[in-house]
Length: 368
Image (cartoon, rainbow, N blue to C red; front, side, top):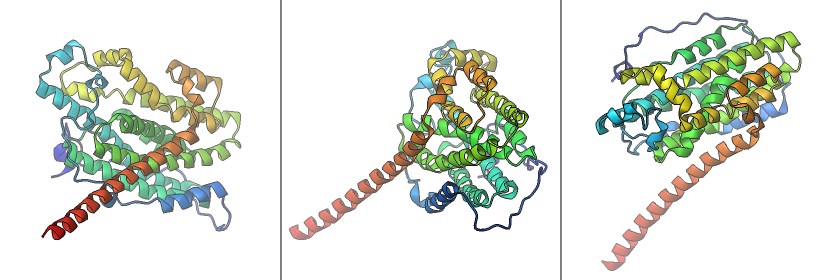
């Protein structure tokens, strides 16, 4: 079955073409490099994995309860719109909600794959080119994983959100080599990483937990890469140049905030999206979710040196300024540890099952 058959509405079958911008840069110095970035490159090589082998795709998934999370996570829960839905329609709403979330994940990951390739082409440093090449492979794997999950387990795909598409367009059409870093590594990847983390931690279903934990293990390296590269470069920029980057961040953060409201879902259920916007703003769960989504972006923006009063006022207006106190390094270590723990638990359980089978065979032989 074609992916096009699973979209909630018809999408253009032609390619989305973005004109190339900026220079392609070669460098002839092959020995020079920053130790921390080269160490990250080594880690990127060491941590490659095969989604066919590492993920247990045999795990069953109920498309009408993919994540097993409380219905309070849905913006219309407890309202007149929720009360009107039958149990079947509520199951369909859960399916649409999960499909919308993971569809934006797969579209964003394709954007990340293309952006990583763009960084290889445009960045002037060889150590950055090295690492970006490993990231392009990571992102290809993420597109593979999320698209398979949507097609085989959820059975439904949503088109790319227009806000995400706008930010991808702005990121890839800017000729300055650092802007793909800023748009993708800091904003899009930062928000996606936080969204992955929230869902990973609240889902009660093993397959989505595995997928998100393993993808986050890669993404932790990607955000670290963006921080290292931009922190060094932004120390060299003038006040005017930094202001241009801050304006890009501010616009991008508002686009990301509006993206997470999922207006497309409610249109499919005959509910006015503007009415749902108000419900989202008044929902304690959605307020918490929105705040957590900026837990990776805000401290990263501060860390790379874009921390003017205007940036801080923007985050205060969005209610996420306190996220600047988050310890990014601790969060990244936690992401890696959780993935390793899931691996250890899975393989220990499989080993115990094999041992039980062998013990049973031995016992049967002894009895016979």
